[in-house]
Length: 134
Image (cartoon, rainbow, N blue to C red):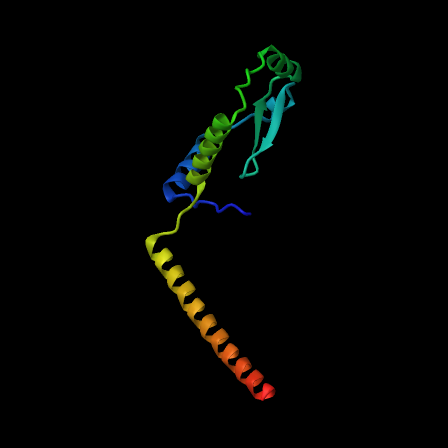
């Protein structure tokens, strides 16, 4: 299923633009240094980002001790499930009251229309069968 995206407020968009405008200009010669990564920004300008060597990343990964696993019983699994449900429900964009009432009205109207149609068809077919059987 697709996930519904939240619209950003105009204040958040404005802050993002201001933050992008405040970034210092990067000298092109910084891009040639070892450990620098070239990133192209929206305006077409380039920015140099220093990265850690891969060996340092591997050392950090090896140095951390393994996490202790809790017992996998019904209670811990259900508690974990409920925590995940709570996190997912926070991501949901709920409809407004007006949208909910409008959608409910449309559903009720369509159900009535379809039930009327099926009732007429049923009455017609049962009448035809009576005529054929006599």
